[in-house]
Image (cartoon, rainbow, N blue to C red):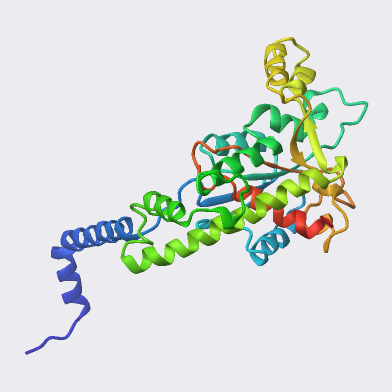
Length: 322
């Protein structure tokens, strides 16, 4: 019997069977996607940690910052994706706004550089750090610390106020972990759940340490380390109208007049590394005007919002003597 595959036989086979081949391929694709959906882990807002370098920053330092965060294990096991993006070219303000509208962003490195005296156009007069605070949801540094303490207090033993890990109730940590990990395919069987509890306890323990360190930094750092601003004041300056007066008044009444919205990381000194290793404006010899700020998406990532605080702590430890 002649079973040889010849060009003529292959052509005849494909002429009659091409529809079935396409159908089999489609079925295979659907099955693969179905399996991925069943066993894959799709990162939530908090599990995707995003850092932006503003469009006036050099891209050469982002890899060094990423290496520092990895080396210091600043982010927890529950951060599944870590992304550093340099916003380049014109119109990046709009791109940033679109990204943040879907809660894609945790940290931004921008600048507080003063415009030249001869500046006339609105774009030329814009101070990026002040503008970003005015138009986006940026945490006050005090608010970030306060919310982190509120979060840790959920796990504290009854009646305690000192938020050290020794004062945490492990049973509360475990119960919360099991509740929030329902449907997470990393922790399906009993063994995986027990391993997950250990990871979660370690996450809370490190957060306790970093919250205490962050508070120490705020109490001991010199004033030059802090970027202060009253929200909406810069928009009023740029547009020259009274439309923002009520909003500014509300900020003042809420106790956020001249509030700390960021860290002047370019002014850090006394640490193991110089800020210029991680932050550098295009055309600048130093990081003097660099500012680091955190976005507030607590509503969408209640358990992982404070990864940004821990990110900041890693840089503070590296670049200051505190």
